[in-house]
Image (cartoon, rainbow, N blue to C red):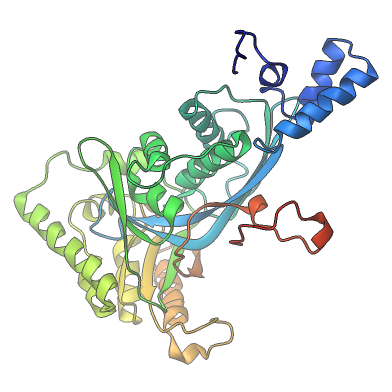
Length: 387
């Protein structure tokens, strides 16, 4: 809140925390305001709401992390999206639909709420009373970035509700907030920025940059019916690794990046190999090696564990335009999907396959992208459109 020249708090700044319609009514009832006073209060509210919002909807993509040898530093956004709607309310509520609805908490321990809290902490404000609705399409606890999606969507929604922006270039403030919650940038970076991202900590802050992606790439993901806790999968990893294993992964990461940057996708067979985490995690993912081999035999360029698993992802190519309209014989993803299922069935690992593609865009605010069909209802001659 700001003080005027006489040092007194202005009325509008004193009401800065009362931006929701429900909060306005609560305030009016509490102080027994007359109808004219309530009308004046609403006018103030309408003036202030231009910078803060009553409701916002955010979309965030799934991500696949590590991509084989890029442990904790490489990740890519996939065309599978969660939606989060947050609105100001008189009481807290959390509604969840879709993936993970039976297991996710419906209180403020939910990572969506943690993301909103982190956003408000970053801008030095208290979190208002909010109602949350999530529509989850990203498979839950499969290694496809559902946790990062929750965190990033919460941060974006919190910033949008508050009407606040962060610096992206140089400081990458949004990345810092999200990574400090998640612990590593391999999922949150592509969830924020889209595409294939490499992320590191330079000693002072988290840093990330984009790797070029070849056109026509397809991703085939086998999702087992069972789930894996990332913490359990991380506990299997060694704190120290042999020099031979470190050298192996250094070379494989270089080949992985080169394969994407130069469109030499046949290099992915080697570029998705790993010595630091996949062999160790194979003990809880007995399906991993058989499925990787099945995908390669069926024509995939490369295959690896997606994140900490249990999902396994394979990369194919040949997409040109929309795959529904394209002759399937020009591509390999369906054959790889069938091979995944056959291999999984043979070892008693039930699950299903998602066929998707990488996306170059990360999370965004849906409610800021809608185009009005009625010219008379437009409030501005300039609109952002990205949906």
